[in-house]
Image (cartoon, rainbow, N blue to C red):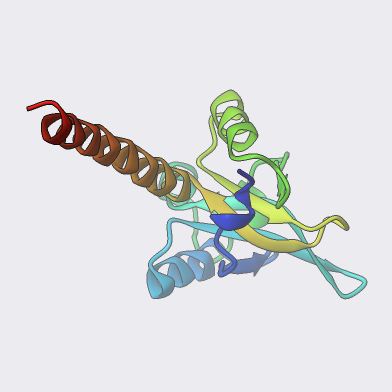
Length: 149
């Protein structure tokens, strides 16, 4: 299965020169824990980073920096990892584990942002799959009882 079926096409974005205060307000308004940092290049929306609520706490609040002056570009990680929608779910999980990241921007073949895949999306899928397997076990037990009293 590819991530095409599970990634979220609705995501919150912000320009790298926006302040971290603006980012925090967007996170609160939309009830999200991460915002994708973008650049607009030739009319295309290109992901260049991700800023999380943890980044705001650890990098800005805990160090008592001025949230109205520090930009998201100042605190975002220098390297952004992305996925294509054709990436398998297994590959996405491996990348998240290897890089210890919980959120990955999803891009099209030209590198333009089309969504975000989160650990929550994957956990939801896996829990549904496990529930289906548990139902199968119960069904098989009931079938056995009916056919072999």
